[in-house]
Amino acid sequence: MGMVTCLGSGLDANWEAVTRGRSGIAKITLFDASLFACQIAGEVKDNFDPQKYIPVKEFRRLDRFQQFGLVAAGECIHHAALEYPPANPYRCGVIVGSGIGGLATIERGVEVLRQRGPRHAPPLMITMAVINLCSGLIAIRYGFKGHNTGVVNACSSGTSALGEAFRLVREGRLDVALAGGAEAVVTPLSVAGFGAIRALSTRNDDPTKASRPFDAERDGFVLAEGAGMLLLESFDHARSRGARIYAEIVGYGATDDAFHMVMPDSTGDGAYWAMKLAVEEAGIDPSDIDYINAHGTSTSLNDKIETLAIKRLLGNHAYKVAISSTKSMTGHLIGAAGAVEAIYSIMTINKGLIPPTINLENPDPECDLDYTPNKAARKNVEVAISNSFAFGGQNACLVFKGVA
Image 1 (tube, rainbow, N blue to C red):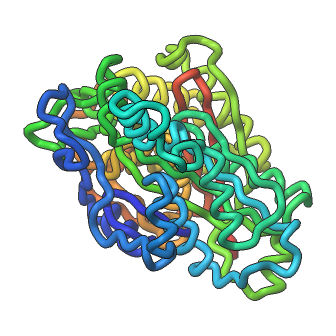
Image 2: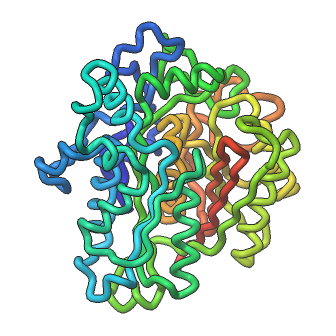
Image 3: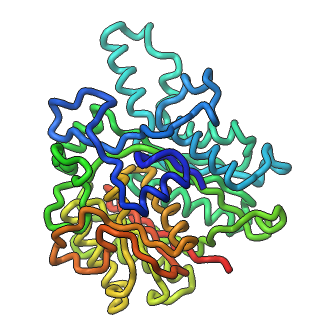
C-alpha cells in the first residue's frame, strides 16, 4: 500500500495522523481563494518528496494528480517488496481511478490559448490532462504490460478501480494488479464548480472543524487531493514470493441509483444493494461485519441516506458495528477517496484500531449509529467494508477480510 494525502506522505504518517484524529484541512494556498465562498481544502504539503520516486526531468512533465499517483505507486511497490520489471509482464496490470484528472493543466492550457493563441498551446497538455495516463505512466515505470485501464466514476473511481482489479485477479487474468486512485482537484474551476452546486463547506474561519460527517451542523464536504495505491495479488503469487499479506478482498458490489445527477436516492436503495451484493459475493452474513469506513461526506443528504442503507443491510447489528468517516480528517479526495479509505480499512483490520470521526459534536438525530466520535477505539476487526457513493448515483462497496 502507498498513499499521499493532506495528512502526509506515506502509509505510516497517514495512519498515525488518522488514528490521532488530526485534520489536514486548512486555508487554500495553491491559488488566491479570497473571492470564493469556500476557501479551504485538504492540500498535500507535509513530507511530499516526489523525487524519491520520480526523476526531476519527468516530474516537470506531469500534472499534479499524476505526481501523486506515481509517488503512491512507488511507495506501494517498495512496501510490497515487488521486484520489477516482472518476469511475466503480461500477467501484471494497472487500474487507476480519477474523477477529473489533470484539471489544473486544462485550466492553464485554456489561459495560454486565450492569451497567446493556438501556436503556443503547451505541447504536453494532453498527456498531462487525460485520466488514463496515470495508469499508463505507472505501467511504463514498472514494466507492467497486462490489462491497463483508467477508471472514471466520480467519487467512486478509486473503489471501482480496486473492484475491477479484484475481479481480474480472481478470474485468473492477472497475477498482480496495482490499483487505486489519484486526484488533484484543488483548482479555481473545481472549487467554483462544486461551490456553485452548494456542495462545499464554507466554514472558512475554522478549517479543521469544517468536515463533520453525521453532525447536525455539517454544511458540505471539503475538497482534497492525493492518491492511494494498493498491490493486489493472487494468493499463490503472493505466497510464492514470500509476500506479507495484509488482507483479502472477498467481495465487490456496484450499482447505480438511476435517480438524479447529484442527489442520492432518498430511499438509500442503490447504496444498500451495492453493500448487499458485496457481502453476498464475500459469502458472509451482514452480522459478520466489524467495521465500516463510511462514504460519510459531511453533506446533509449523503450521511442520512448512508445511515439508512446501513440499517437496512445490518438490521439490529447496525447499532453494534463500528463506523467512521475518515473524510472528517482528509477531506474528500473525489476519485482517490475510495482507494485511500480502502487502505485505512485494511490498516484497521491489521491494527485493531478504529479511526475516529472527528468534529462529531452534535449528532444528527437521523444519524444515530456508532460513528466512533472524536477518538479512536480499540476493536478486533476481522471483516471491514468500505463505501463510495458518487454523483450520477454510482455506488461501490468493497469487503475486506483478515488473513490468519
